[in-house]
Length: 183
Image (cartoon, rainbow, N blue to C red):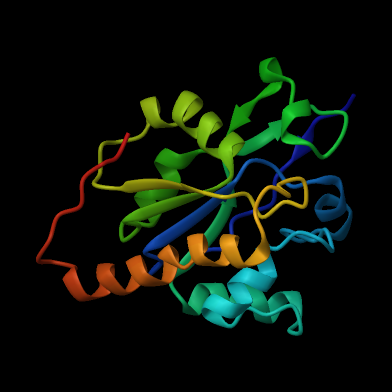
């Protein structure tokens, strides 16, 4: 099997929030777009939260994230897996992205949200021990993948609303409050 490689981050120098997936699935890799699977709820949820709606072009959605202060990337630069399932990622094939450089270029990031358990697991195991101890809060959100059928769209939306609420808190308290690293 050949390795799969992630996309470049969707980023803005003023981003205060970073959303991390594990690795794009096969539909996303074919389309060259984050969360391209038609049943993935990422874009419908972010559409409701920050206006990055599926009715917009991919470029307009990514600009919507950027203007909302949200960066988007994957924990893994590359990995080998037979399917799109995170559970099929071969653990000995994981290569994490360079987060030391990323955080150095994006010093305003105060919160990192993981889109599901695999993204969080890979980050905590392969990235967290290597990054500087800047004050960042980490939180796992329910996966927007269609394989996460245990939660309804409405339940996922409520959980993901924390991004908007916390982003507002970061803006209003920046300079007055120091966040602490969770973990």
